[in-house]
Length: 107
Image 1 (tube, rainbow, N blue to C red):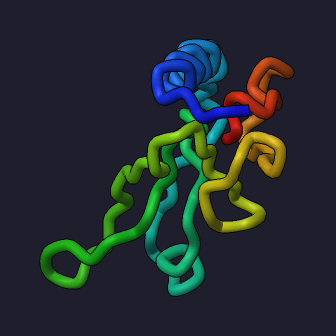
Image 2 (image 1 turned 180 degrees about the horizontal axis):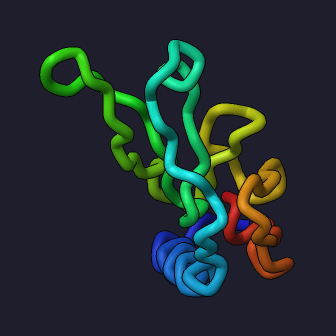
């Protein structure tokens, strides 16, 4: 199968549109107070994003919203990286629609 950039872009846009309905507010924002919290990447209510603790002023740390790379990657708390939908497990109670598990979306 020959790679078609237009088809890949359309698939990525469709994937993003499908996941908009998955946004869930059950993921707590990290407090960034302990060493463990500061060294952990945290699940975001939007699976295309995650939280990372970052030093701020006067020794205070704050959570900063980060994006997974484009191309349909989702943040996996258990892996501590952004992964393909087939490797993703949700930490916020959402599910990836079956349509995102197709080879066209993944590659």
